Length: 170
Ligand SMILES: NC(=O)c1ccc[n+]([C@@H]2O[C@H](COP(=O)([O-])OP(=O)(O)OC[C@H]3O[C@@H](n4cnc5c(N)ncnc54)[C@H](OP(=O)(O)O)[C@@H]3O)[C@@H](O)[C@H]2O)c1
Image (cartoon, rainbow, N blue to C red):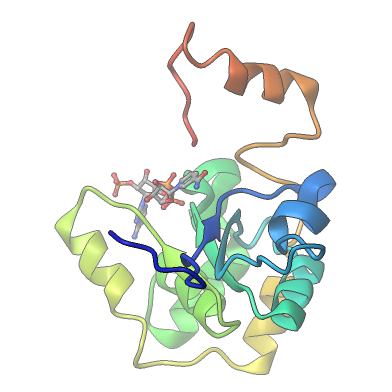
């Protein structure tokens, strides 16, 4: 690819955690080079309302990695999600994805099962109402489920990857 003078590549960034939020999560205010997409851990247990507001303000598109939190901490068994799923004739997985897209968050769910992939794609013909959104908002634990870089043990786990390449996330 040839980049001509004055042209700029589109940029994305991946996980920004709380302590780096201002710098990586929203781009560098000094240079004006903002990412177009910010890929963050985001799911009903870690909703990141404030981060989304800042990204909206700066025109950065949020993208949720591991939108199901890999099913950790009972995500698919959350009574609130099951209840809303039943109300709409959907699954908790579909409710989680729909909740994201209704807040303008791109989702990248993963499954090795064809039927679950199809399920994840079938979220465009129903809508969560205000009450559903309010109920899901109450599930926020304001804490990462996958990678908590506020913990030094987690940082060490990531940096030790080459010696112990068994990570459930990343
Ligand atoms: N940028 C980053 O740092 C970063 C970090 C983590 C992940 N990611 C990316 O985010 C994407 C997804 O992340 P992820 O795979 O870690 O987590 P995820 O999408 O939150 O969860 C995947 C897990 O959920 C299960 N699952 C999927 N659909 C389901 C359904 N309908 N019902 C019940 N279980 C279901 C999958 O099982 P089955 O496969 O058995 O269906 C798998 O165990 C991947 O593309 C990954 O590369 C990026």
